[in-house]
Length: 273
Image (tube, rainbow, N blue to C red; front, side, top):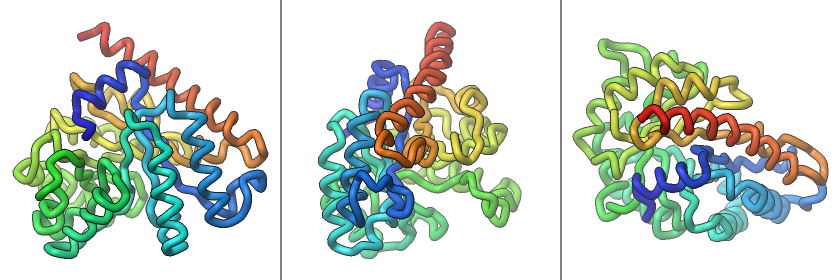
């Protein structure tokens, strides 16, 4: 179990709210790691070894592993086991089914993988969300709310109030801030501020910093709460900082730069309290 207090303790200790996304693309992994799934495993474990003192969470993207069937799943299990216990593990699965099917997804992620959290699409309502919390009071369900992709404009900003606002507001009825987080993309800071108004206590998982161009300070200013309340995800900018044998060193350098920016802002926020 990793609760809000424990997440915040890690944020304070590391002066970081960094979540490292593990999206191992075999076509981009350095040759020094080896080939195929074995290379993916070496690559991801090396990234974890290089960054675990700077990151408070890791977010493996299940699609990169599931495409290889049982071999990929077993590698993912070993990678998760390699992540230090104090770091949160978020299974980026974006599941979106209901009832017994959703429950089986929860079993696979929480019991099978041992992840602390899973990303879930909430667009079939409570039926697609509550199965991930029933029986798993100590795990986290992270709902897609305000995503950073350009296609978010197709649905998330339509309606009155906009769909993303309705998702965040209605979800407050389904679980507590110790059970629910929300995905809130870094590329739209003014909407992050609105999301924070609607969910003052919940943690936000924030993709879009780095390769997608989100501004770190703007995100922290818009989404900060009294426990920080933000996990800032960076994937490609850290994973692929180098294509050579020095990839782990380069990944650490990229993560260190982000952590240093975070630390300066976190100190400001803590002093201001």
